[in-house]
Image (cartoon, rainbow, N blue to C red):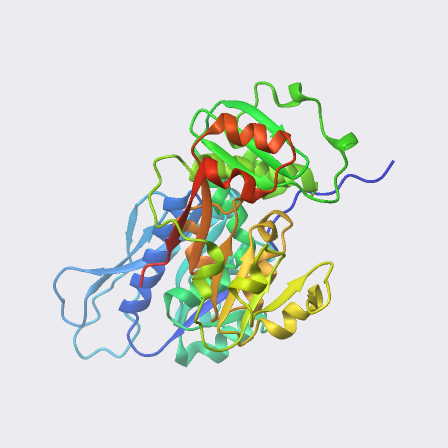
Length: 411
C-alpha cells in the first residue's frame, strides 16, 4: 500500500527583512498595512509593529509597540534629554512586548511581524531570542532593518534571509504565490453543498450561495469518480479546503469548483469579454499557457505552450525561457487546479498576466499575487449547464447559459 501523501502546504519562507534608510515611519506604516490586509483575509498574524504618537518630548516622538493580535500597546520610550546620544528605546518596555512574539510562536501563527532589528537586537538583546526561536520553528518572520544594521542582521541570521525593498509589491512577492490557495480558501463563507457533478470534461459544484465550475483533470478515469452520494451533506468550506491541501487531481478540481461557487456568484458584475481578446494588440512577446480554442485566430503571433504540444507549439519546460521578459502572458485556469500557477507567476514576474477560463475565481484576492486580469464565468441557467456538463459538452457549448466576467487590477 503506497504511503499517503502529506497535505499540500506552502513552501517555507526565509525571514524577510525590509531594508530602509534613516527614518522608519514609512516602513512602520507599510508593515502595519500588510499585517492588517493579511488579517482581513483570514491569516493568523502575531508579533508587534511600532507606532510613534503624541507630541514630541525633549528628544523625539514617544514610541510604542502594538501587539497585532490583541491591539495591546507597550510603551518603549525613555526620555534621556535633548542632548543625549544614547538609544531612546526602553529595554524594559521591549522585554514586556516580547510576550506577543512568544504567544505567536506557541500558537504557530501564519506570520510573525517584528517592528525592527536595531541596536538592542544587534547585541543579542531586545527581541533577538524570540526572533531566532520563530526562525528555528519555521514560522515566517517579517522584520524591518535599518541599512546601518544590515551587516549585523546578516551575521545574526547567518545570511539565511531575504532582503526586501520597502514597497507593497516586494512584500507580496516574498509572501509568495503558493499561498494564494490558502488565501482563496480562507475567503469562502461556509454554505450547504447541494450537488457535485463530475462530467466527462467539467466539474460543477452547486451550493446555496452559487455555482462554480472547474475543468476535470484528463488523468482521471470514470472508475475513479466517487458515487453521487459521496458528497452528501458536504460543506462548501470542506470542499474548498481540498483546493488548498489535496494532491489528488479530481479532489483539486472539485475544490476549485467549490471556490468558484463562492466567488463567481450570479450578482457579480464586470465586462463580458472573451479572455483571448484581452491581449490583442499588445506589442512585444505574448505567451499563451494552455490549449485554447481559436487562439491561432485571435492571437496569431502568440507563443503557445502546452503539456502535449502540437506542431508549432512549445513544450511545458519552455515556460522558464519564454515567460521572463514577455509583455503579456495568458494562462488557462487549469494551471490553478494542477498547482503550476505559482511557478508560472514567478517566471512571469513583471509581465501583464491574465488568468482565463470558466475555472477562474473572480476575486481581487488574486491581484496581489501577480495577476493583472481575471476572466471567468458566471452560471446563469444552472439546469442547462448541468445537463451540458453531464453530456460531455465543451465549454463553448455551455457559454450561452452564463456570461463571462472580467475583473482588472486597480491602477
